[in-house]
Length: 553
Ligand code: PMP
Image (cartoon, rainbow, N blue to C red; front, side, top):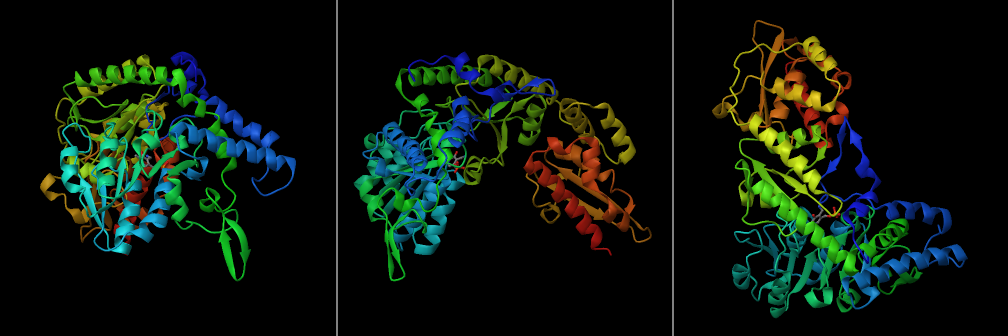
């Protein structure tokens, strides 16, 4: 890209014009996936209308056209990474599949009892679980590098931990929780000095940095197109040609063969050796439509605009005493993970959602990092080059409003009567936007009698609910009715518990089993506002209620 203009860039993402419940969408969940560039969206349609055919195999002109479009993008990616050859670029579904490919095809073959696979505390599950599997199967051991106070992999400790037993180093370039650039070049050099092989998970880095794999001298580098304005379902494994040549195929079938007979099969050359079956052709072509963004002077300007967003947001957050960061100093890319004092992360994310702000709450696919930091979860906002200072100002204003609202310690309301289903329906009939419904849920949360902390037992925990929630059933011997006590550490779940219990409290077992909760939520207009994980949480609560009740049948 020759020139970057923030306002013109933003206009090329039609979805950013979305208005929901009178709130303009503020999309701050770019680390999960970015929105799609106009040209990417159009290219799919263009490809299907003009060039659609299977690649490589047929002799007709359409196939030649499709193959050319598809293979041109491989060369673009080779150039993007400054790889030595396009044979080193393997298409995968995404970073996860690329790591699995290396784990299966390299790790499983080359690692053995006593070898060490070195990871860091800040890895995404995608760069932990495949290696755990390799370790279990081969007898290799996993070692975990600690982080320094700023949240980067601690080089001083790494110099000791990466020793002659280290056979494989797999680390992230930028953590999807901390937003800090790791000293990967130095870490790769340490591993190389021991003769170990290296993989860099670049899922969060590739859209925010210039990556040169020859300069880094890593053996493998992985990333996903959907985090760089491209389509979902397409990603890249870069691997040094010499290593890829030695590695056995990962999947078997058409496309990855040269010759097949029942007496044996001869595999194809790189890169097709690792690309069994019809690939995601339109994904690759769509990816090609956004690759120009990541080079040239325009990319430099884009990065400097992202730096401005990052500094502005960091300064605003750092001024708020109620904001708690987990590591010191500003992140290197505009990706912030934090908590508000005395606020459950799901409560904050739900509140932000009710104001049109898409943020992320939870463990961020980094549960080991959450326990390393001593938290159950946190809120993450991740910005990119189409976000604006105006959006940051709006976000900070909402955060301040929420912080003020939560300063007082909530008083437990004990032994209050549960509202009836009719009362709840009447309250929600008046709330005709998600904003108002959300406020209503939060008000209802105050009505739930709390279970004292020392009485919250693990056996009463509801599994499948992302926030912690407890449920106890009481059945007096002389009554056909049953009573529930419930609590949660998230206010939004307490509000939902009041709504749920309004149809289950003081009912007979049969009445409980007969409740149509989906219909109830539909009438309340809540289903579409519950994220899949929260929706599952609600269903997990209902399932536990019915299971407990059914145990009395
Ligand atoms: N690694 C990191 C650091 C990530 O942030 C992600 C995506 N959140 C992944 C790996 C996995 O990427 P994908 O789901 O696209 O395979």
